[in-house]
Length: 134
Image (tube, rainbow, N blue to C red; front, side, top):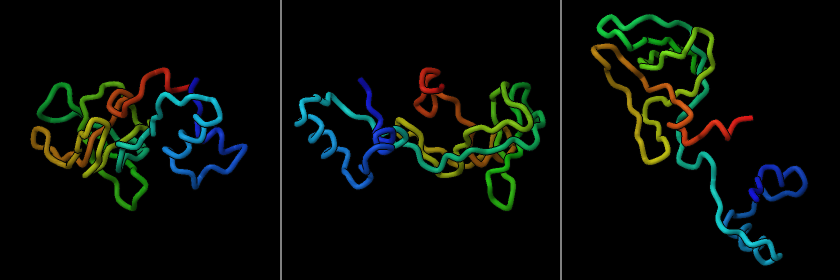
């Protein structure tokens, strides 16, 4: 059985308990803890962004240039190969100097001559599956 520490926090305050101590104490109650997972621990600098504008890349048949609202005063540009995006979509965006599961480091750069200040992320790139969503 999986037990969410966030769910448990609805009933008792466990915010100041270290995850290792939490597992040890739970095992002492007779409920053996075989392992634990800190979801999102490897993810840094990934935000929810809104796609404001999409234009085809001038030097590619499959790349798109997206103008993104990332919650700052200025919009940012991200080049993507994802064909399932639409204007107005909310998407996970790994910005410059982001980290993804598996130690993948995302930086800004150029794709076929166009600036890209990060990348749009799929479920798999964030370490998620369809089963992780309601």
